[in-house]
Amino acid sequence: MYLHLGSDTVVNTKNIISILDLETTSRSKYSKEFLKIVEEEGFVKNVSNEIPKSFIVCEIDGQSVVYITNISSKTLALRVQRYEENK
Image 1 (cartoon, one colour):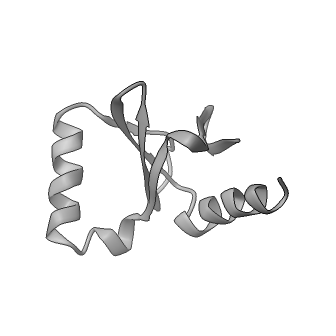
Image 2 (cartoon, helix red, strand yellow):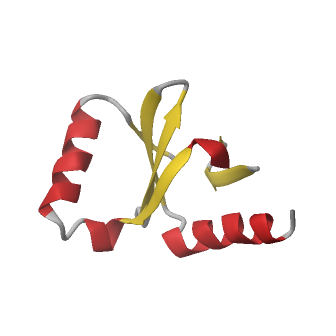
Image 3 (cartoon, rainbow, N blue to C red):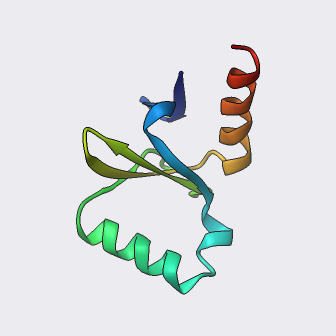
């Protein structure tokens, strides 16, 4: 299944490692450090021009990619869950 993350961006759910709420995880110093490092390394792709709500950590062809989107983590997780239930 492919999950739409915003704009023209979709990812295969097989590549998703985690879907995280940006507000909740940004309280943790480890999450802040992780996001800072992946941004400095060029692994972050912002797929929205609006206020970000979540980030999705993926591994695509052995490369880490972190997508930042305005779609909530709950909405993204529900989309994946609905698909899994309807298989």
